[in-house]
Length: 563
Image (cartoon, rainbow, N blue to C red; front, side, top):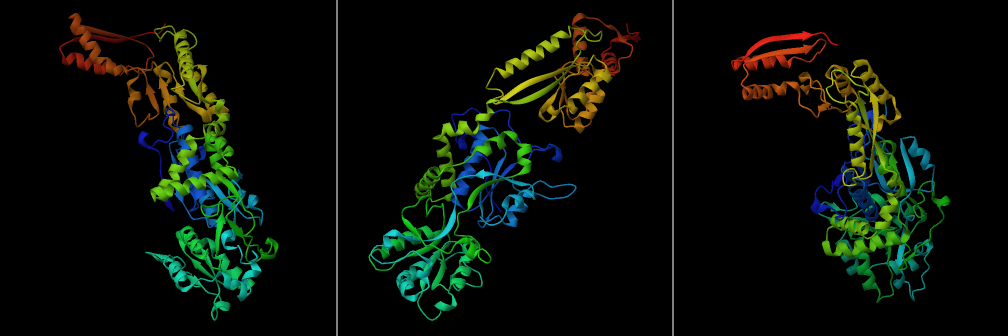
């Protein structure tokens, strides 16, 4: 697999510059994987349409919806739903399932043969509609090379030496083609049936045959079976990524001759566009006659969007948009034409793909809005609030003000689109009464609610003596707890309480405040009175040590009964 491009990680590489940054960021997270952040990984083939649509989706997820961890990985899918695709997108199967290697694939060619739906769903992969117009393989002949030649675009044309000779190449033309049959790693066709990158069937060993140009053998080697089974008078030459250039050049050269040209490729693609009017298609027998040993390569295939089932549950906002992503035939054609223009300038395929994807998104704001249209009902984020609803002797302020302040903060955040765009905060307030059992019950109630998966954290509780069980258990649920008035210094142990935070200083930090106050007032004698039952008064011993080291007299440290 090849990692193509990770993310638009800074403003310089951002495509939709006019959009404000989406915060907070969204991530794919699942309970069965302990809510760890998981990247949304797009499985991409060599096909240009597959790459362009994947980059369009990637940029949209990152910049419109706020998913920063979207990764594109190139894997050659060989134009079929092979077991490699299945294994990459299904993950491990067993008591402890491993997450899939890839999450989405925007363009998988689904053959008209078999029951692909059941085949995928058995491995926790689902289809969600076509990404664009259907695709197929074909033998194509430039229409300009059919004029005045009396040729019939039918496969039997290639069974007779007389008609097959119209598709032969001269020695100079063949030499030109052979220059493109290999790269630094050797011939594109290294299979046993190839000799110097060319397949020559038995029937062509003793006589001149037509030459069929093709791209890469890993996706078109099926043609060898076709040639052998139908006894076609055809040699096959694989020219890898140079097919477009070789076809264009030979078409120009052959226009002044009586000969023609035939090549094998797929559509939609950069060479044969959707609804192409430049090339004629060679007709082959129907799929039913080929299916047993060759397959329905020349029949229409659905270009299907696939996703691993974890995507539907772990990234709901992204999934809703993915369900809507599709392109019509005209849009596919425009994308390919734009790519052909850009790649001539940049000479870098990946850069051209990224530029085409970005340009399309910039020029189609209406479609972008449609893809995210059901996001108008903003995703709800819940904050659990544990407050004392009634006066508590240990809290030295009006407890009603806490709930009121939290509600006002919620309203202010929801009214400010620059803070939580596409989200709506909702406060789930409960009465903790500054009692340990009431606080723990409030936490359990929050965990048991269906809304727990959207719970971002807990605000509260108010009192230190109710906090210990909650702060202790919160790390098992990966739930942040933020207290606004619990001062116990023991909760500052980050190893023991990794998910606990507070907006008030711990009481141990007050030592220097007391010292400076006593110095300012010129007092030298100190007494400490603590209500009986208060657990977190350990700071007093530290304060006593500090004051005595500064020559203060600590005359008394006594508790009194609670009222």
